[in-house]
Length: 91
Image 1: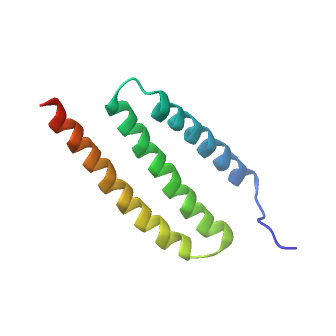
Image 2: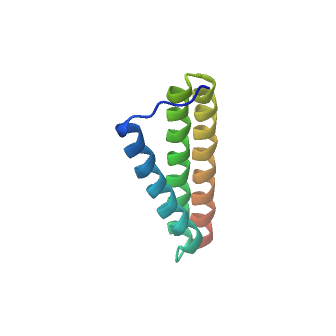
């Protein structure tokens, strides 16, 4: 049976990224205004991209890097589009 061999550093990374994911999701869902939600969405996309990169190393599969690159670009474009839409709405 094959599995992932995680050492203590990997477990700390998982714990910290999971904590950041939960806190960002909380801010995204309960943020008091739209700019807070956009920043939380950007943070969530960064955490997800970093998770995909880590999965590439843990599973020794470079396909995750391709997915992370595409996801990162699309997330960046989405956040910029949301920020511009909010900026136009406030003017």
